[in-house]
Image (cartoon, rainbow, N blue to C red):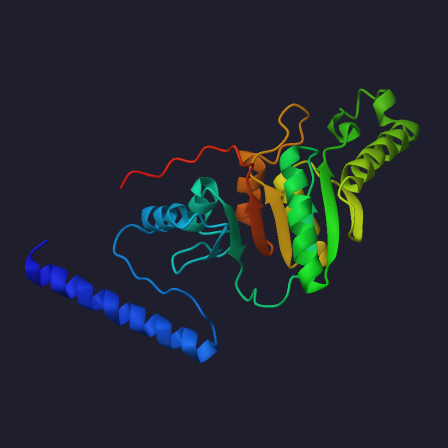
Length: 248
């Protein structure tokens, strides 16, 4: 850059920082205000790593985002940030009274339950520990009935799954919660649908889940939920997840 361009950039940064600080002063907020020049994805992730942030909070949709679902940039932050990411939906300024913790029986979903417990304890909210499953009898061809299609099998299957869910959630004591089974063929869509039905304020899920049991809160499910985005979403990642900063 020429000296004149550097001066102009510096002036714009200082003006932007002053406006942000003024807005914070009006709203009573306190924060370290900083304006930098660069690609948003790289600069934000660089700052997250530089300060060892515990949480990245971003708007779910920007000015160029689709009508429904998270914006492209917000989705990239979820994939690449080395920490928890809270996507705040439009109008998501009220306390998180109804919190959905997504359970796939993985250690990562255990982290989602613990995070839901922390949120609910501060907000006085209720927790729905949700497990979406694809009933095997729905996958059967109607011309080839098997034992799995009988009401007895369906009752036993559901009861066993409910027991497993209660046992898994029961390892995380000290909070009131509901253990919910929700039959749906697509896990991400099922989570979004349940959240819409109960009017959830926040959905919490892991970015890596159990891949050996068809209960996947991995890429496909998280990505599907981000496309639906019924409310604010908090994603948690396992501590050993590797994150690589994008190249500028």
